Length: 121
Image (cartoon, rainbow, N blue to C red):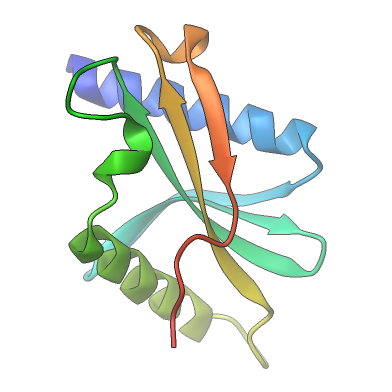
């Protein structure tokens, strides 16, 4: 397995554990559709939460939060809409969160959790 995949998986596992400790409930990870992928899908009370996990080593190019482009946001929204269409009944309240992990290694990184960061109209 190559290093970026392993590092990405470590970051996602770290984010999942962190969110579970915050009271969220795990639904699935690495949800894929033709239009995009969602790292984690969890529940926070009655709300469905689509979570993008970003890990970045320290650099002059910015941290994990700086790496969410408009194109990436559109792909997250498209994948979330695909997921919602697979659910029975009316869709629940939803939001998009970002977990950014910045540090030399994911397990030593600083976690930043931003809630409801992408607006979809």
